[in-house]
Length: 161
Image (cartoon, rainbow, N blue to C red; front, side, top):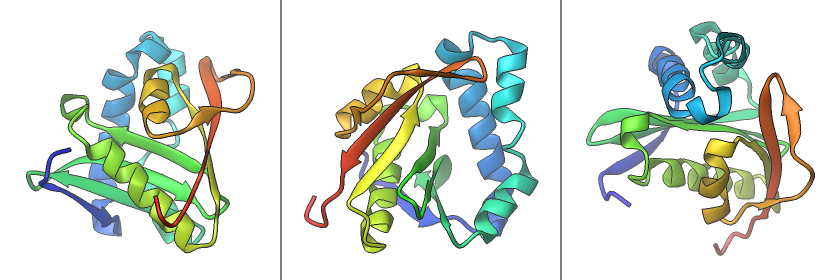
């Protein structure tokens, strides 16, 4: 992991860059999943606008963080108070540099701080090995959602991990 990764709680001032990171990560980094199908991409990105990000930031049940690497915003992630990791997106050129791992670990810390003992998520094929590496395990059959494969996964959380 790159020592210069900084994880911060996102603020409304970050809404534009968050929307752009998510959109670009989906369009470029997740091509294996959407196969450049315009309808699938549109379905996946339609609710990732600046207005949506601002709504997420205003919702106390959600935690949205941002990763800075070499002082550049390179990734974002979000969790729900229910224990669901909603997403983790990193700019494709910054893949495998530790930003995604740092983002998810920060989300897990937030969940542990709220008394949760398990995190769950739906992974894409692109992200499956990433989440497996972080200790998440498949827990149900893969689902088809809006033209994508969603792999239900979970992980036990411990304050000492």
